[in-house]
Length: 165
Image 1 (tube, one colour):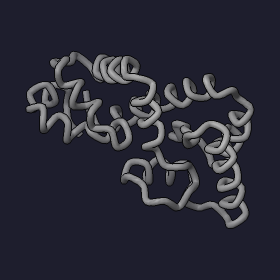
Image 2 (cartoon, one colour; image 1 turned 90 degrees about the horizontal axis):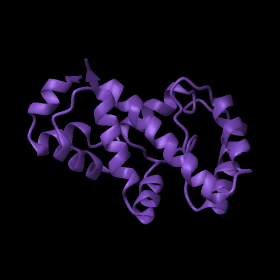
Image 3 (cartoon, rainbow, N blue to C red; image 1 turned 180 degrees about the vertical axis):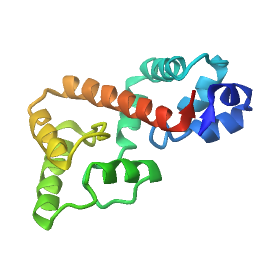
């Protein structure tokens, strides 16, 4: 863990290396956020990072969404994603549960063109499954924004796990 003071004293390269995984496989967010330092709190850093993503073109946001692994899948994931999914019990799916997740994830990607995103910290595998079922009923624009909001929540959790006040 690092402090805000330590982050503010880092070079852009060190800052990006430290926070490059806050947004899944998208170190460009941290790299651009460095231009706005110093930060007075984790909350101000988070707001800055969200603003950077929000002002990006739709295609860039879509690519950011697509950087996330499917929940409950057995794909190779970043260390952070693996830890988050393990916390929700998604690494302990029965064969039947795994098949249900595969089917729903495939239907989701088919409908929306990007993977289902959910900030799983503090959630159970049942809650994840139920959310996936419900959100399959959304329209694409609504689901795109929901996915972005979930990514912002994931980033908040990751910053809280990285920065000590």
